[in-house]
Amino acid sequence: MSETYPLSLPADGAITAIRLVKRRAQAAHENAFTLAEDIYDYPGRQWVAQVSLRRMSAAEAKVWSAFFARLDGRVGTFLLGSQLKAQPNGNPAGTPRVKGAGQKGGELLTDGWTPDAPLVLAAGDHIQIGSGLAARLYEVKEDVSADAIGEATLKLWPRLYFAHADDEPIVTEDAKGLFRLDQSDDSSDETRRKWIDGVSFTAKSVIDAP
Image (cartoon, rainbow, N blue to C red; front, side, top):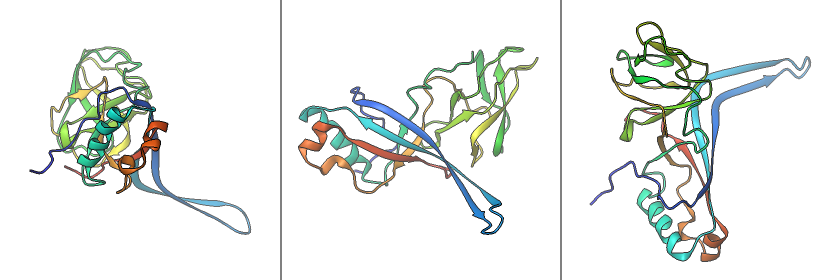
């Protein structure tokens, strides 16, 4: 029987840190004579997660070993979010949703907020749009307030690579996105000493449409 993805991370409190790094597809060329730079900015944007696990017992290590085995390297996916940004700095009043199908790019029109609510999201807040294989994690780039009819335009990082459905709920607390391991090999088969000393792994957010 094949696995059903995405998986949830083991809920054993073993994660000590999750660092989310913004990866950008960019290049630079420096003129050898003037030292002037040409910057080439391509559309690619992606989260890179660096996850650290605490020292654990042999029994706890087996749980994580099984988790990595179920992922089967880069085949499987799992849900992951930022520990530091689980709660928004804004006050997301209302029941926010995507307003209109077919939206891609760096901005998203939303509705369902409480009309005229100030600062429903603050710059740096994380949100989740979609669930399961369609779950994507975004960061709000500017403070957002709702207008008189409860609409708001969000400027997001990374860009919307595929269009979420009209009326898709927007998750503003404990937001997560879809990730997969950055390597085919993992620490699950390493020595017991390695597990006891602590393990870390790297993952990248899934960009393509489900």
